[in-house]
Image 1 (cartoon, rainbow, N blue to C red):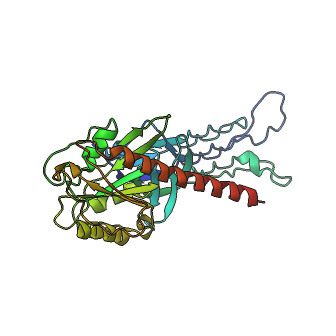
Image 2 (tube, rainbow, N blue to C red):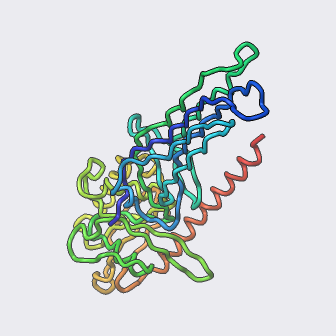
Image 3 (tube, helix red, strand yellow):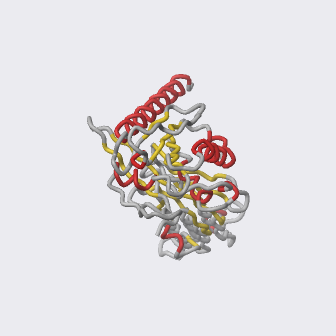
Length: 342
């Protein structure tokens, strides 16, 4: 089951209370206060784990509490601090504050971590309050409460190329042909009910990750169909392949609807570099002309068939080149930022 959204409540550990104690040891005249401090409460961390692919684990449990700190003890013994609680999520997970909808942070790289809630400080024992005028203090402090918050976790798949198209545009067929992924394929709309990822392997050790999402229909940005629910999974892609089947009643109209839905959902997503793919050319009669399509701003228009694999190598080569050009530009920007950082 593919779960890409979860709401959880996290509670960091409470700090341990300070102790009130006095020394009662032979050979130590007048003793004195010896109450130790309480231990710090455990923090709650979020960690990216590449072994995970969904947020399924968070659908079984809603509240997560870190251990509290132990109380202080006599002989100036400090209580043990509570262990940190680490919640593991797939790379590409974004954490939002459920109350304000603000982004708390996002994890993109395996092993990357961030603190979601900090544990409370341990209280001071009475030994901390000894002064020249108060040799036997009885004052001590309770531990502080840990932070509490409600978070919304959303998973955005990390892929180089995203497939966009209406239902039955041939997206799953293409994915099954060019990768080892085995998405469900059938001759009815909305066969794909959840996103699928696959790795395309080309010659010379070249490869890239491709993502297929459920078909987008008109009004998807308003929640119609399944496209709106999963459009966020292609927000991280570097290149889009907008697929329009050649057997469409209105090829130009279908393309325009897809572009409109992307723009209505996100301006940034609509600005993502894209290629256009005319799919299912195997059903055209021999030597039949391709439908005319005006795609302003596209990196290229390619005709192919996932069934016969005609034109597929050309499409993959174009997607690879486009994604690599963007990678080089990203690296150049990073180098420029490092150069100008004081």
